[in-house]
Length: 278
Image 1 (cartoon, one colour):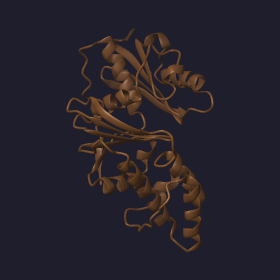
Image 2 (cartoon, one colour):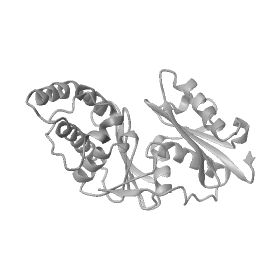
Image 3 (cartoon, rainbow, N blue to C red):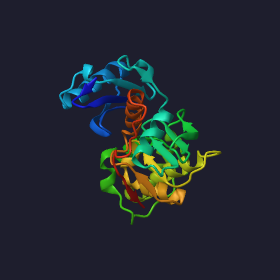
Image 4 (spheres, rainbow, N blue to C red):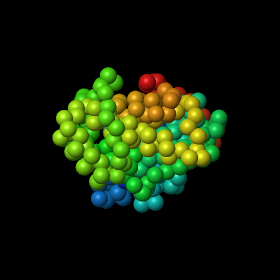
């Protein structure tokens, strides 16, 4: 259906830790939200969908096409179609940054590298979804040892802080290592910086056959942590681009794919702009 003169489409990304919803109209984001997945991804996904609609006074009947993606994509009943998260992240990122050639997405429980061609299509990818190493969960667990919630990490560390190396990427062994560093009197900021660089190194080492080439776009909830962004740029040897809201790119891509299904000629070129971060 069309609301006004434009088709409204929706993308829903149901991940292991969070659900993102994007409503798209006339090549612009009409509404977006991020909510916890919880223990009932199907029900919580539908609640998030309704909440996004209510935020802009829409009803489900106002949405022409809904595409779901992410780990829980096949459990979202209102979807007209489900699409791989690799394709959705690629489409969402390339809409914001047409020059993107590498997508680095680090979420709560997985991380992935996606190589794009000059048209923004994925040509190769590698994913870590079996181990907490290099994911938001690892940062969250090690932060708990330091007594620092993830949301407060940007207030603790600055680019000028030194760092100590964290040798273990196993959460259990890393916890013991961090406790030992604290007992030796190491600064919390230096330990936290070491954790960020350990995650960045792990992500870069994932590449294997997948190349990390510019322009690099960093997405996912972890991209909101300035220290991780800085660490990844140093480990990769390139500046990174970060979307205005790095956590919704998968849902954005799903909404774009839904729009293309309604109007094949539609070209999404004005979604938003990000900024370069050292």
